[in-house]
Structures are given as structure tokens and as C-alpha cells.
Length: 118
Image (cartoon, rainbow, N blue to C red; front, side, top):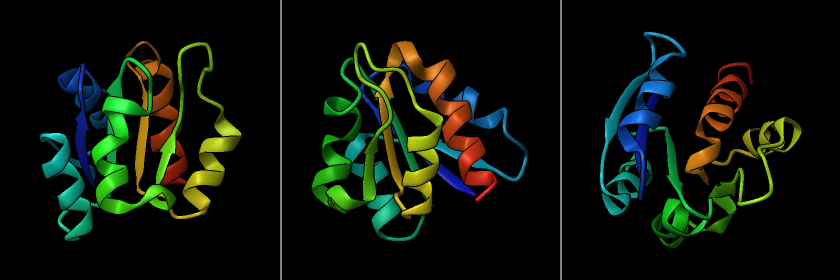
């Protein structure tokens, strides 16, 4: 699985959390536009990103480039990640996931587990 890390904050920390889920996962940190284009062109499989709101800086470019139907806001201020909603988003084939930076330690494992166990 090829995962690109976009978003506005904590990219290296998010990358480290993704890498904890197995050696078969490759990661690269990119700008939001580059990360979304990597998904669109087939150079990457999954986009994850963090920002302050979970959907703005984390997913704005992914939404613009990939379309809203490919993106999922996993958490927002005051709304923690929900495992069932993440599993449903993965089941629907969504490829871009955004979350608030303060939820990264909860969001990334839930996203990665849902992807690896689909």
C-alpha cells in the first residue's frame, strides 16, 4: 500500500504513525496538491492529512482534485474519530482521509486498520 501524507500540520508525525502498520506500506510526504495528484495519477493508493479543523487544510486540495466522494473527514474539533464511520468510508472506496492534528494518534490507527482489514 502506498500512502501519501498531505495536510497542513504534523506531516512527519503522521508519517511515523502510518509506518507503524507494516513494512508493506510505503509512505511519502508531499504538498497537498502533489499528494492529491499522486492519488489521481495512480502513483499512490491512500492520502492522509491533518490540520486544525480536519477538513480544511487536511482535505481541501484532495477534495478539489479527487472529488468529495473520494474524501472523508475523520475528525473535527469536538468530534473524535468514529471507527464504524471510517470502516464505512473505506468500504465505499474513499481514498483521502483528513483529521485534526490532536486526533492523529487515534485517527491514523483506525484508518490504517480499516484499510488493511477490508
